[in-house]
Image 1: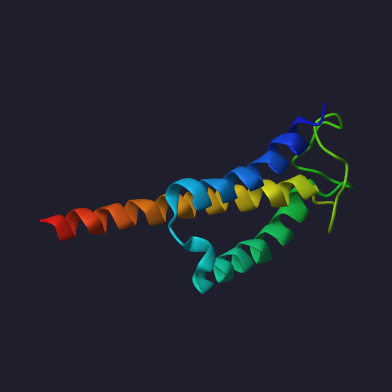
Image 2: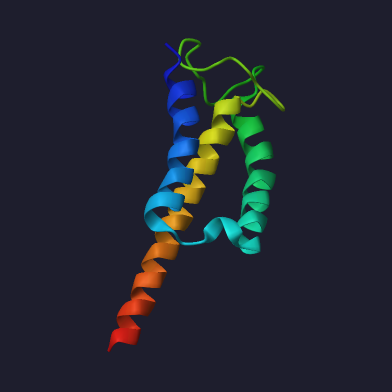
Length: 108
C-alpha cells in the first residue's frame, strides 16, 4: 500500500477544505501567501533534492510507501504535497490565532 502517497494526496484537499469550510481566513486570496509558498518551494527543491538523491540518499523512502515518481533531482512528488499541506495548515492556524487575538483585543 502506498501510505505516503495516500496520506500526502489526501492532505491537500483536506487543507483546502479546512480553509474554505472551517477557518475561513482568506489566506488563499493573499498575495503574501503565494509569495511565501514560492519561497518555500525555492528552498524545498535544493534541500529536498540533496536529502533524497538516489545516488547518496540521506532520507530513504520505502518502495511500498511512495509512488516512485520523483521530480526534479529525485524528489518524491509526495514531498511537495506534504510540504504544501504542512506549511499551509501552519499559516492557516497562525492567521486564525491572529484574528482571534485581534477580535479579543477589540472586544475590550
